[in-house]
Length: 324
Image (cartoon, rainbow, N blue to C red; front, side, top):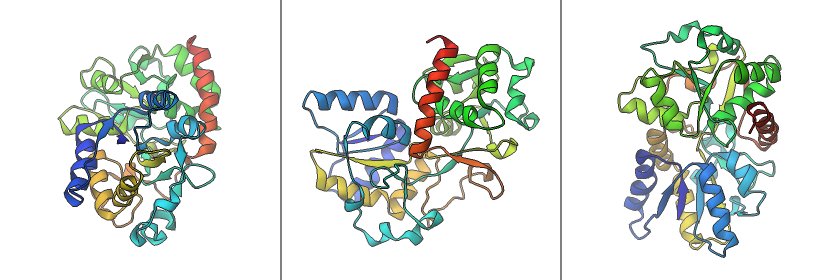
């Protein structure tokens, strides 16, 4: 079983393309967010059920939940194709890992996370130059945000602001307590609210969901981080993979992982997900410049293990502010 991100396009890309190349291996795919997947997986394991072979998802959940629980095998021994392990095939000349040991959580996608999204028919995004602009009284009661008290894009955005030397606790505190932000645990709902004009700004928007909804014609536009003087967060999105230990189909999982990391697998992933691949031979033509890292812009690597520890502190602070 492959545990992966939600969305019909991603499901098709991660199953149909593989099954055409390996017709003898059927992919059972379960799509969900990390905040719902991880507790379910660990609960099954405590009950003696080992159903999953690998997980494709956000490093945040993996590093704070699956890795500490001892649920993962090292992925390096499973990488057997020369085309996959060749460092020259990958951005920055290396395979990238989110965990400090460099063994378990392989990151194959990196993009610049958008912390703000608007409806371009209602809001001119060019007016934003600093995240402090979000504190303007004209936005009070008109902001929605992916709930920052659970794992997800809202917490990722808040962690970046919380740890930024020019923003920090004061900015986060004012934003969450003064601006009458409406929170939702449904990432789709946050984006649909601004598309319908019920709110004007969406904070911590789900990039994958935004890509899917824009393709359906909804009026949603990210405000890219290079527009803000404070820079942004380099994000893996759902673009990382781990091997679950005690897996029921370990050999099939190895075949799948090596396919996923080929040019063909990464092309299918990138087209469906809206995330750029770290493979240098996968086209980036579909992406806007603001979605890709730029020279001279400050970025925090939001998917590494060190950042995961920052997230825990931010989560505690957010819960205290919101009384949860």
